Image (cartoon, one colour):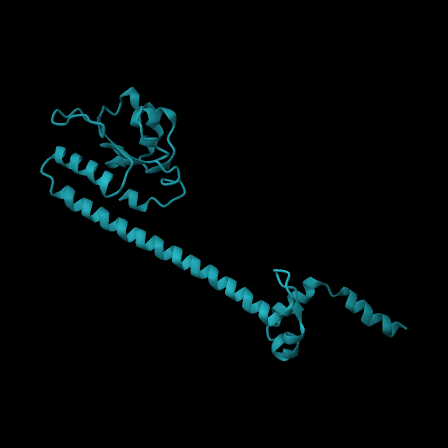
Length: 220
């Protein structure tokens, strides 16, 4: 009687976790019991007839392969976009180097941001009162200690590139009552500790300059 109870008790102690742990620790189990691969039947995810363990493994591997292919395509697309962006930045640098004076540099920058980088709106804020420069829709000349810059105090103190949506006071300073509705903005400090000013690049797309995105190219 006791001899019959012992195997039953042993079987009762075996649970799914124990079986899973055993199979994981013995990956050659099905090599030694190949007939089980054909005999085991698993329910199909779509509700169709049951499939063998081998078929299920093939299905799982195929699904993983598709996921890897999608990730690879995404990485290739990001690499292609980064390569194109690097090329545009290089072209911009060359064009700026050929400008004869500050006015030409500013005009070139405004044009390239609008055409080559497809900025919906851009504003260059310079901490100067230079007489040779005229304020425009793109260019703002202002002293760094001007109270109008109070909404940018934290940004200027950190002197680090920031992306995302701007506060109402910042929006009014940069874009005023523009017809173009800006959804996200990149703020780029100019010079050490933002000593020269900053550049604001705006996009209609609220996610274009997302805080979670890489800012490596913007920091250049």
